Length: 418
Image (cartoon, rainbow, N blue to C red; front, side, top):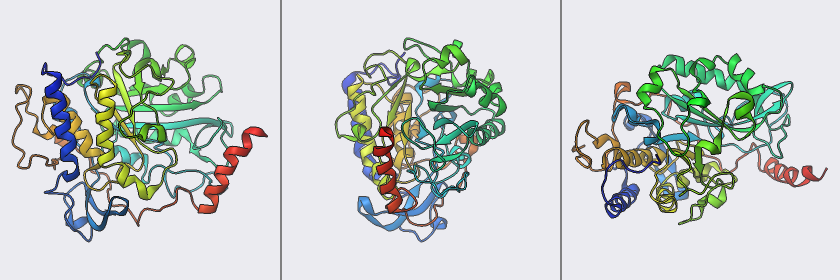
C-alpha cells in the first residue's frame, strides 16, 4: 500500500497536521539549536557549530548533524511506512583525493565519507556506476562516459564501507540507488559479490509490487535482507536480479525542476506520483549544479515546503526517502528535523517522532518538554555518533577551482558533438 499516515483521521486533519509541521520548521529545535556557539563543544550531542549566510544566519550557532532512527522508536512496521535520509551522489565527496593521478573536474555533493554518512543516520546512497579502467568505478560524469578527470574510485571500495557498516550493525537496513552505466556482462553481480554484500541482499523476487506493503523492518533484519539495491537499467532485473528502480519506486523530478515552489512533477521514468503504482516514494530536493554554500538554505525551510507540495501532488503520500546534497548543512534542524516530523506525522500523528508512544492511540503524543524539540538519545534509542564537526567554511564553488567549473560546463557542451 502507498504510504499515507497510518491513522484513519480525515484528510483535512492530516493536512492540518502537515501544515503544523511546516509552520514549526523555521524555529526547529530552538531549545537545542540556533544558540550561539564558538565550537561544537558549545552544542548538544549530534550538533556542530556553523553558519548559513545564504539564509541570513551569519553568526555561528548550533546546527543539527545526526538523524534519529524512527524504527527504534516506532517498531515493527513495514519498511515503506518510514522516512529515511538519502545522500545524493554519496561518493562525490569534496576534497576526496584523485584515484587516477589526474586533477578531478566535476561537481561535488557531499563532504564526509560514506562510512560517516551511515554513522550519522543516512540510510540511502545514490551511486553513479560506470565501466572504467577494466572495472566498475564511481564517477560523477556526463553522457554515460567516465573519464579520468571525473572518476572517484573503484566502486568496490565504497561498497566495502557499506558491508562493514551492515556487519557492525546487524539491525540496520541500507538502500543503494544506482545510476547505472555499467555494460560489462554481470558487472554489478560480480561487484556486489566481491564486496561481500550478497549475504545481505534483498531478493528482487520477494519485493512487493503494485503498491503492496513491504515486510516489517524486524522481519527484514531477521532474514538478513538488509540491503536494497535498485538500478536505472531495466534489463538488469531479468539479467542479474537487480531491481529496476521505477518498478518499485515513485520519484519526483531531480535537479532544478524539482525545486520550483509549489510544484512536484514526477521524473519521466517514474509513474505519476498519484498512481499508487509503487509503495516507495523518493523525494529529491537538490539543484542541478550543487553549490556548497547554498546547501544550508536548500536543506531548511524550502525542503519542508517541498514535502507539502509533493504531498498534494501525490494525493497525500509522504516520502520514504529524502535525497539531498551536503546533508549536514542547514540553518538549524535541516533534513534531520524534516525526517523526524514526517515520521512523527505518519507513524503516530505527532509533530515529531520523539513524541510517539508505543501502544498509544494515533495522535496521543507524549510531552517532550518542547513541542518541537529534537531528541538527544543513545544508540539504543536510534541515533549514531559519526563526526559532525565540519572543517572550514562552505565554498561558493562546486569544483576544485572556478576556472575548472567553466571548463567542465564547456566539455558537457562540446563532447557530445565530437
